[in-house]
Image (tube, rainbow, N blue to C red; front, side, top):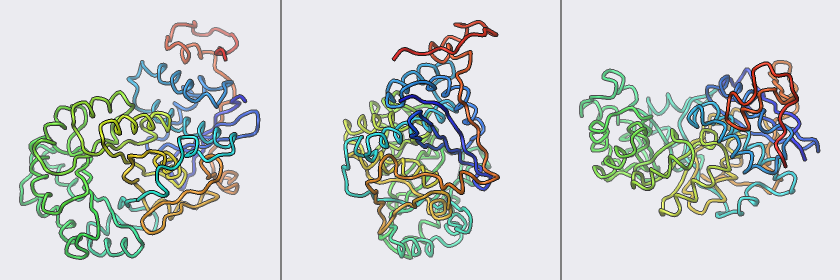
Length: 406
């Protein structure tokens, strides 16, 4: 089996999402997804990943991942290239599952749990306005989620407080006011709802400690990314200064960055984004590393039903998964796939369909306003993709593309 084309799909109705399809000469196509900064990711898919994987065997996903990773070293292993690698890697696993007539989770070791606990991140999209709801009446939002079987939620009411002084100062009084949604939730439903605080790395270390002091009374599920993750020692220091469970971080990529997080005992829960980290191949290894430190893992996921299925297949195969992120305003409003996301009683359930078990609807794929970009031929500068040396082939050389040995 050989990869014959790499395609990106963009839907004008969903501008923050990019779907990647990898085509093969046996008619099997895999799908993956990337979110945010999609134009940059799209360029990396076609001008970086495609140069490496075209003509190759898609079942050799470990080898292809290693080639892509090695070739990204000029850009520091993060950013658009990593997001592109992540989406491509998802598609390769989808192909592998379809070729084997098995669900991806079985290829990853089978189900470590029968189903996965979900929490709802309260993003607004379409006619579901969960973000406004948690800012205005978080107690009623919690009641609505509980009525729909969801027993954990994530909110970020303090972000606006960080802007005045760039996260360098905030009064305790303002923090208490900012945490009113937590109070409203506890007053409305007590401990029936787990609540996580997302901080989006907005604070310096002393202010993060101050926020933690005020947050402690509400017994949150976790305290997520309160400070930037560019200094893991600071995360370790923060963990020593609070009783709250520290979660890190969707802002990290690859096992090499997470290694330092674990070695410095800097978190209680590890979170990764399957796209940002380079896909299923790499995140399975990160989860295994966390397990060696007896740490649970969860995922960042603000994607469509396609991404949610990617996350679910990966995480149900990991014995240390404590749950996954879902966004009901996304999976309930994206009517683009041939199967929905099966979330019942606060858990996600997976079928035994081959691969990821989900595809774009034909009418969505073929719609007039759907944007297709396809790369079918290897570029003449592919030697850089193989060797990481931008001068391995002289600019303007008119030669056949480089073919890596089988």
